[in-house]
Length: 489
Image 1 (cartoon, one colour):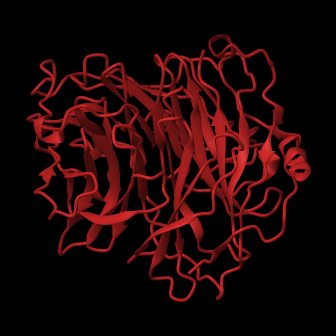
Image 2: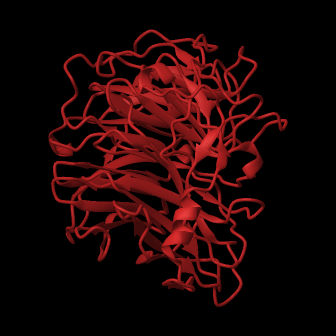
């Protein structure tokens, strides 16, 4: 078990100021015209802020992780107003399958590149032996727009259990508090973690795999104390939880054997979990539950995006409004085999948008594809391949949030490429209109960041937070980083 200590050595205010002024080349590109930014190059100055806590070395050597990568991540963008039990499908949602949509290569342009980074902060430094540290992170923002990170670290002694921690940011100094231990989990640390914030009750909610349970931890005091419950329990192993908050309920999507299920439980309750609802496939097909799914809310309804086996081979991407009789097809891979595709779901102006990391037959490049609905999920537009970073390919995890207007952000860590990328890791794809997209990163290519599963959150004031773990010490210190990007104008 990792031991978290307060400051090992005192850090003077001058040191913090100097660290804040450190000039680090980064490569975050955004659309200048709509973000009201004036810099005209992809390279700019960023702050790397010193944390106020450090970590003592683990008492025993950490073992190497031995688990499968999580498949998806998604974050809700709006506080909830309607309970899941009463989430009727919109009147315009079709009960039958809409016409099949085709995929196309991107016709969007990169726009004018500009700096858009508020700061890159080392939120939680890694211990001396970082082998089992923070393989998975989650991030959310409180009502005041302050980021909060959650993460798990494997037990050094047996590699069979892990500890769940949370660290919240100070709104004045941007420093992150000493991580608070939340729970001990019966699985190791490379399994999915999902996080949400409920402004109505000031609750931070964490959903996580815990063997044959989906664990659910809630804090109402900014992460200082936690109440640990179960969102779901079974005789089977439950995996890939995703949580959103809807009218005082924590709603969780998870995988149980060959099914995707949705379950709702009152925040902070110790009651026996209610009956779950199975996700409905499109056209009576077979859901690929082993890939997980993505859950989001527009504050009134709940939606789920997932993969199912395509009749023509390959994978279909489907969307289901919770409570509707059938799912709607978003698009497909045109028969292309995909071993580890991932996707994310969010809402824009009451209608769902989907991002997926995959390959499509007939398009030479695998990458991030995007499709939007404008009719509350009744139909979806053509899958469009978004611009990437040179030959750097997509990743195992896709995260997405939406913000003001039609602003959207997609994050992934590339796992392929020939070394010609101009930006670092993880990749960040930004748009202010869901038509013109730019892909870069909060870090520079020569920072040599080693990361797998980035997380995203959008605050009520329009800022974007990207959290990721760097396990390399080649240039940047190992630890959890949070990039803060200002809101669109």
